Every structure is written in structure tokens, then in C-alpha cells.
Length: 75
Image (cartoon, rainbow, N blue to C red):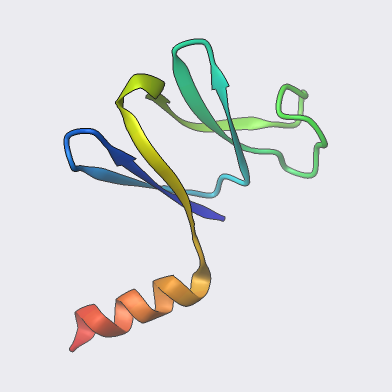
């Protein structure tokens, strides 16, 4: 799964390969759980972390959206 993270300075980041996220202290961390049930399990892998105070919005980026974006940029 891919997430789009929007920041207060109007920049964005794509986080690919994560299937969950949670706040860990001052950071929001994205995880690939690799079949594990909980985020803090031995099977989870940290994919990306961002300072929570900078984040304005987190959205899932669906495959259909990715295909539409690719078509728009190709024309």
C-alpha cells in the first residue's frame, strides 16, 4: 500500500510498501507488518518516519489513483 503524506510547508512524500502507521512519541512511523498482527511485533518493519508536528494530512494512495496519475502525466 502507498500513503501520501502532506506537510505544513506544502510538500508531499509518497510512502510505498507500508500497510499501517502510528504515532511513536514525536514521530509518525509507517510500517510493513509482513503478515504480523501488531505494529510493534517482531515481524513489522519500519518503512519511514516523519515528525508528527509537520504532518497536515495522511491519505492512502490507491492503485486506481496511481494509474490515473500516470495517464495524466503521460499526455
